[in-house]
Image 1 (tube, rainbow over the protein chains, first blue to last red):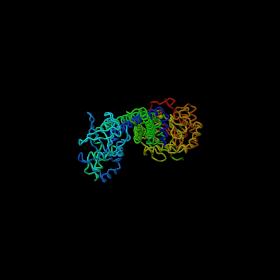
Image 2 (image 1 turned 90 degrees about the horizontal axis):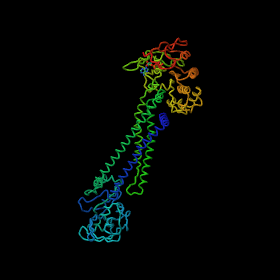
Image 3 (image 1 turned 120 degrees about the vertical axis):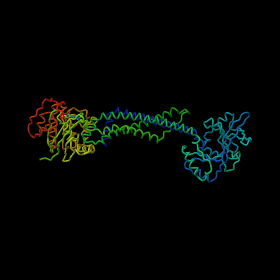
Image 4 (image 1 turned 60 degrees about the vertical axis):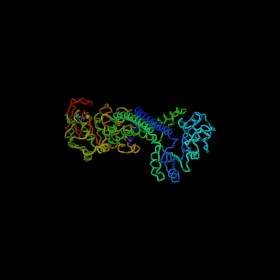
Length: 383
Length: 250
Ligand SMILES: Nc1ncnc2c1ncn2[C@@H]1O[C@H](COP(=O)(O)OP(=O)(O)OP(=O)(O)O)[C@@H](O)[C@H]1O
Ligand SMILES: [Mg+2]
C-alpha cells in the first residue's frame, strides 16, 4: 500500500489542487445526478399522467364491437401473469347527453367500482358526492358536471346507442386532473352496461389490465398472445398507441444523455490536465523513489490511487450536491402543482458515482503511464 | 582477501545517436566488500556516468556490471530496481528527500519499497538516525532542515536497507567545509563499523587522499587505480568548486 500512502500524501500536500479536482468531479457528478433524476422523474410523471390511470394492456375480441367471453380459462391466464397487477373486465358504450339544446357525447365504462378503482382510482378522486355504483348510478367528471350544471343527485338523461333514452342518477363527481377526461368519461354499473350492450354475464367489451412496469406492456402483450386462452383475441397495449409520446420521451432522454456525456468529458479533461501537471511536479520524487528501487508499475499506481481518491471524494460530494439540488427543487416546488416530485433512483445514483470514479481513473492513465515510463536516470542527471 | 562485491567489465557508455559522446570506455575494476574508495577526475571525465552504470541506474553501451557475481546488466528493469533497493545506497549532490514526508518517513522509504511495514522498520530507522546524530528530528518535515541535516538524512536513508555498497556522487557538493568534514568522517565511521563499501566521487583532493583507494578517470577512461598511496593528482584548471565545466567532451 506504499503507492496509496504516497498518493494520499501528495494530495494532502497540495490541498488547493486536490480541492479543485474534487470540486470539478463534484460539479460533473452533481449535474449528472440532478439532471438524470430530473429527466427520469419528469418522464415518470409524464407517463404516469398519461397512462398511470388507464388500461395498459387490453384483451378484446378480434372483431370490432363484438364482446369477449371472459371465462375461467381466460381469467386464470390473465390473473396468473406475474407482470400484471390488475385485471378488470369492462363494458363500454357511447351515449349522447341531451338537455334542451345542449348535447354532448359521453364514453361510459361499466364495471364493478372496487375493480375499476384498481385502474382509475375513482374513489380516491371524487370531488363531490359519493363513490358509489349501484344499478342506475352514474359517476361523471368534474368539467362535465360544471359545464352542464349537474351535481350529485341530479338526473342524467342519455340517448343510448340504440336510440332509446335512459335516465341515470349522478352519485358522485370525479376529478381526473384532465379536462378532456373529466368531460368525456363516465362510469356505470357493469350490469347496467351489460343491459345496454345486450351482453350476457361473461361477455365484456374488453379485459383491461395494468402492469408493474409500464414499459413492459409490449412484452406482456406478446407473452399473452402465445397463451391458448387468448388465442384468437386481440391484445393491444399502450405503447403502440402512444408512439408520439414515446419518441418524445426518447429524444428527451438522448438530449439528457448528451448533456451528461459532455459534462463528464469536460470534467475528465480538467482532471487529466491537473493530474498531468501534478505528475510533472512530482517527477523528482518519483525519480528518487525509482532510484531507491521502486518498481515502475508500483510508481504508476501512485497516480491511479490519486485519481481513485479524488474520484471517490468528488463523486461522493457530487452525489451529495445533486441530492441537495433535488431537495431544493422539491422544496421550491412544494406549493406548485406544475412541478413534479423528483424521486432519485438508487441505481442511477450508484451509476453516477461509479461513472465519476471511472472518469477520474481514466483521466489518470496519461500521468500514470508517464510515471511508469520515467527513467530515474533522467532525474538524477537532471539534478 | 575480502569477497568480490562489484566488478565493472569493459564498461562503456556512448550518449546520443546522431551526435555521439563517448562518456566512458573500457573501464574495468573490481570492488571488494568493505572497501572505501574514491573516484576522481576532471569535470566531464565520466565519473557520474561510471557511478550511474555500476549503480544500475543507467545501462552500459558496452561491457557489464557484476554485482555479487551476478550479471546485473543482463537483468530486467524490475530486477535491477530490486538489486538497487537491496544492495545499493545512493547519496547525490542534491539530497532528493521527499518534501511531502517527515525525516523518519524519508528514512523508512527504502524499507517500505522492499515491502516491510513501518512498524517493523521503525527500530532500524531510529538506529540509523541516531548513528547520524539526527535524533529528535524524526517528525520534522524534510523541508524544515538545514542543508547539512538534509544531506545527513539522505545518508541515513541510503543506509536504511543495510546496503553492501554506498555510491556517493559529490555528496558534499552543496555543503560548507564543516558539514563536508562531518559527512566524510561519518562515511569513514560507517565503513569501519558496518563494513559497508563506499565509492565516493569527489573533487576534493584532500578527501580522496583519505580513502583507501583512488580511481582516477580521464576522458572516459580509467587512468589510474591506486591503493593506499598518496596521489599526485592536481585538479588541473578546473575550479575548486563543484561547478560543471564544459571541458573534456571525449
Ligand atoms: N545524458 C547525456 N547525454 C549526452 N551526453 C552526456 C549525458 N550525460 C553525460 N554526458 C556527457 O558525458 C561526459 C561525462 O559526463 P559525466 O556526467 O559522467 O561527467 P562527470 O565526470 O560526472 O563531470 P562532473 O564532475 O562535472 O560532474 C560529458 O562529456 C558529458 O557531457
Ligand atoms: Mg558528475
